[in-house]
Structures are given as C-alpha cells and as structure tokens.
Length: 156
Image 1 (tube, rainbow, N blue to C red):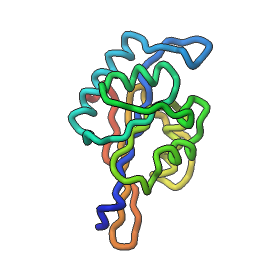
Image 2 (spheres, rainbow, N blue to C red):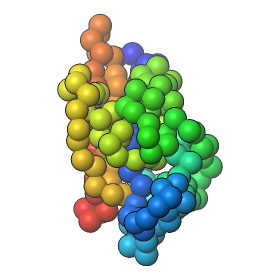
Image 3 (cartoon, one colour):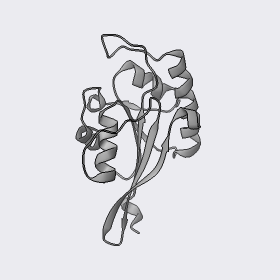
C-alpha cells in the first residue's frame, strides 16, 4: 500500500437550524447545538490534530464547526448552492493527503459521497449533524474509496 496517497475525507452536515429566509444567516436550534456538541466530542476523539477543516460561510455551518473548538477556514465552494464536484475540488480529493473535513449542506454532501462510493453522482440523504467518513487508498495499482464510518448524532 502506498501510504503517501492516503486521504481521509469527512463530510459533516450542519446540525438542525431554524427555518426561514434569508438562508445564509439561519442559526442552529437548541437541538442543533446539542447535536453539534455530541458529534464534535466524537470527532475530537477520532480525527488527527492536523485535520484540515473547511466550512461553508452559512451561519449554521459556522456554528456547527465552532463546536469542534479547532481552527477552520471558510470556503465559498461549500455554500448551500454548491455541487458535489466543487466540494471535492475544495478538499483536494484524492491527492491532498491527510484528513480533510468539509462542513456543509445537502444535497451536495450526499451527492459527493455517492459519487465517491458508486462512481455516479446521485442523491443520498445525510441526517442533520450526521457525517460520512471516507478514505482513499492505493493497493498495488488499484485506487479504492472506502467508507470508514457513517454516524448520526443519535448513534453516538
């Protein structure tokens, strides 16, 4: 196995937010804040300290990211109207190496996951505050995408 090409990609959907418009300033609900903290606690025990965290500029994703209490950078490519390919390009998949976490929105997160898992961009629902953890590795001359974890806050 060529370890230098390994990359982990964590797709974390923002936690529950209030309904309404405009969309970008929507904040987390009390339930969303609780779920963000539960997931952040789990993540902080499992992700490397040098994980690169990229976050949508929407308020609800920033609040979800804040639960981690780690540095992150805001990327317009992860905004609510983004598409799967924009997310993967922002992450540097699969060549960036290391661990990259994207905190964003549906349907782009689910579509990115489906593209990596099946080779076809299709809809896949990710529960609010839920995450998918995928890895890319090379075995011999074969590149593989591997689902490492799929977790929702009620499972932690």
